[in-house]
Length: 94
Image (cartoon, rainbow, N blue to C red; front, side, top):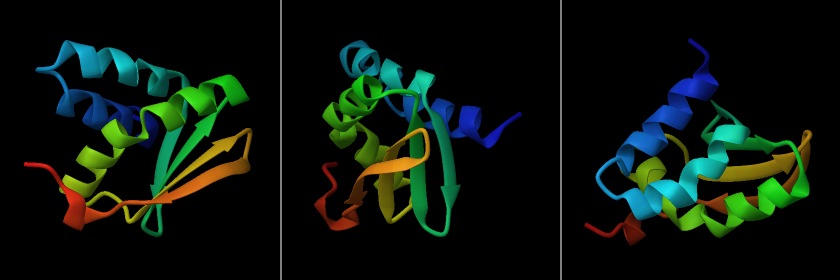
């Protein structure tokens, strides 16, 4: 099993009880996720997908922060960095 599918499943399963939020996160299925050196990397195929991921970044941040997967989230298109965002664990909603 690849890390990509494990990370994707982990984030999606965090919202398994809420179908509305789960639907908003379906876009990450078309991206490749990896984690290294405290950064969750989301590599998208095109700019449209990257923009959709940026729109759902608040939903991605929550499980990443609570599970302490990374301190930063970087979104890229074909390896070119589009945006890097910090994960703020002190702003968690419980």
